Image (cartoon, rainbow, N blue to C red; front, side):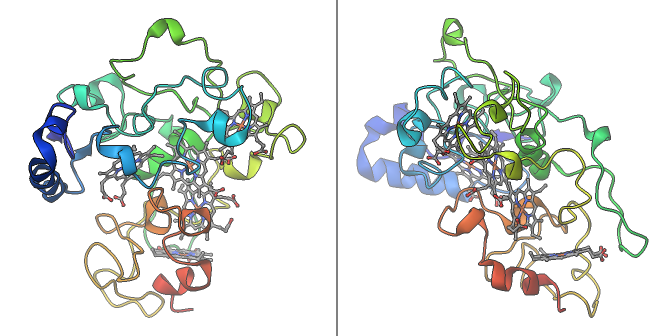
Length: 268
Ligand code: HEC
Ligand code: HEC
Ligand code: HEC
Ligand code: HEC
Ligand code: HEC
């Protein structure tokens, strides 16, 4: 797998507007699903993720507290690296370091996930795919939100005094639930899916409506999904089929409003 750097580097910022447009468009054409997307704060200056719940920069200011970045978790001064590989590590072998393929996060303990299962489900899956492991690496509550494979080069390790808290409703000093208990701050437990996914929508299974006609499922418009934005990843349903963390315009980052989401795929 080849790592590509998206957008432009800091150096190319000096090239002026015309140069930028060309570089940006080349960068975007180069993106395909299997390639690692590198988080570049220069490219991300206007990114839609900024100010959303997945933007860990400026969280203290937004929430009006002083205890999140630098105390609960490290402030890497780059909102992209909590998920994406920093640009200067584009050529590193992240997988050898234990990364989820394509992302700047460690593999959760995949053998401990209990996926949805039932005797009538078409295709059984035992391990979530990388793009869903990305989400679970925070939302299963076992790893700190700042536990990234590569910290940005600019990050001074001496500043790493954070408590490295996890999205977990427990009342202890390694869990955001210490404050996010519904009294000190909003209750975080609903964002905490844990490792038992049997009560959640199934993920990482083959989409039944893809290759053959199945009267229970609609056929996607393209291999990548449906015209309304609901996505199919290499024939599978993933967390990101329904959610787009880069689009905060709808509640809960849903790709389409919940009243039409289910019927996009299910006929009943
Ligand atoms: C919470 C995790 C997360 C953070 C933080 C994040 N991204 Fe992403 N990003 C994703 C996911 C997931 C995708 C894949 C979306 C898809 O394939 O549908 C993605 C895709 C992208 C893409 C590919 C374009 C596309 O829509 O397929 C670019 C470019 C990108 N991110 C840039 C950035 C930049 C720049 C930042 C920081 C400002 C950033 N991201 C922060 C999770 C994140
Ligand atoms: C780096 C850690 C991290 C990763 C990776 C991550 N999330 Fe989150 N997510 C969070 C945090 C923190 C919140 C906010 C929790 C809160 O408000 O209490 C959140 C909130 C959410 C919410 C609720 C939004 C709302 O408005 O309340 C959804 C939905 C969500 N994430 C989906 C995803 C999906 C899908 C992925 C994978 C593509 C993902 N997350 C990856 C940390 C993460
Ligand atoms: C010292 C207490 C404290 C700790 C620890 C803490 N928070 Fe918060 N957080 C707050 C307060 C107070 C608010 C603002 C009130 C609210 O949203 O309930 C807040 C708000 C937030 C928001 C909403 C901000 C916005 O603009 O959307 C998110 C997201 C969040 N916290 C995530 C986290 C995560 C993730 C952790 C653990 C890694 C964490 N917090 C740990 C006190 C804390
Ligand atoms: C089939 C579509 C679908 C898939 C797949 C899916 N979700 Fe969701 N998700 C939803 C819908 C709809 C909601 C809001 C209603 C609800 O809470 O059930 C939601 C809610 C959430 C919330 C917020 C709960 C709240 O009320 O604040 C989080 C966090 C979340 N999903 C993360 C994930 C993660 C992580 C995955 C993959 C393991 C995932 N979702 C897979 C559709 C989906
Ligand atoms: C991206 C397509 C997609 C979307 C959107 C979607 N589903 Fe599903 N759903 C599936 C697939 C595929 C299965 C697994 C079917 C199988 O393999 O038998 C499934 C299974 C289920 C199951 C388990 C039933 C069984 O056969 O065991 C339930 C319940 C369910 N979905 C409810 C929902 C709800 C509620 C929504 C809207 C919030 C929704 N789905 C949105 C594709 C989707």
